[in-house]
Image (cartoon, rainbow, N blue to C red; front, side, top):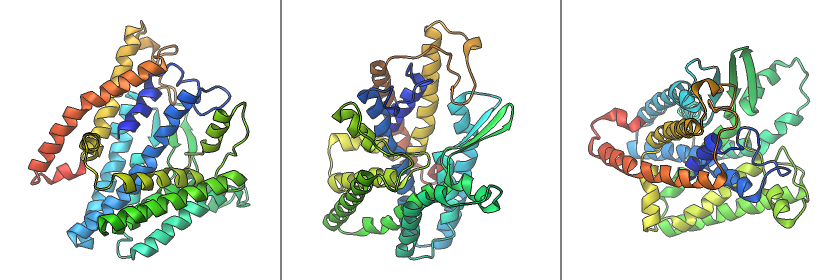
Length: 372
């Protein structure tokens, strides 16, 4: 949750974010690259743990029908909010000239489909999830005919796609459903592991994490399968290492998934059962994830506008072209200032999320609070 705020702060405010790809090794710097790269861990962990939360919810309710109703209703709500409140928070465009299908909608659709699979054994669901994760990179090499109906149906479900529906309206599928649903399914199946005794649980997650990273390194070394782009030797060792870890998120490749979820499992094995001030601080945001998501998005975007106007730009300078966020050309702040703004935003949101977490806990009779 905290790292996600860094990504959005950089996206909205960094002076180079509108015209420079931070992962382009020919133009980036190590710090800029890593500022973007570290945030790769946000979405797959969100989706994985969304599946885990669905399993824990089902286990606690001991009622598949009630769990199914909850997942369907929550899924529908997430989809509606994605294409209204969240998309407006991204673009601040009253005309909604671009709609982005991203992680919240992917989770919403995942909940709906998952709700019909609850009677399957976790092992079966894990198998399906792993098959999706390990095989969806085969899709681009399948020799479909150009006019294939199957290709037309599967492409938006598997690949990043941008559709220019009209001259004034663009629909972007940034988080294609199938690969992200594979991650959710593995997260759901992993929910069973959280019922193990803590020492056994830590060992299991450690083993899974190490195995995932070993497979990642081996596949990446051979440059044969698992990612849309290959790594190559660069001008020095640091840039070569960055090339090695520069894997594809759109859609999440096999190597991207192994790298991110592998590290996630290692972190779980390390911090599970540990109590300290840092973990307590982070857990405040984790208790109210969707509330935090909505608030932080609007706060960061509003601060972007304030900075833009303080720099002398006007309303008429705002651009609502795709992925411009209303930013005026030439506006923005340096990367070190981005970090200062990010830390300030997290600090500001901490007491707000702490208050809401307590309010939510003390008002369990308000069932709608479960959705926020």
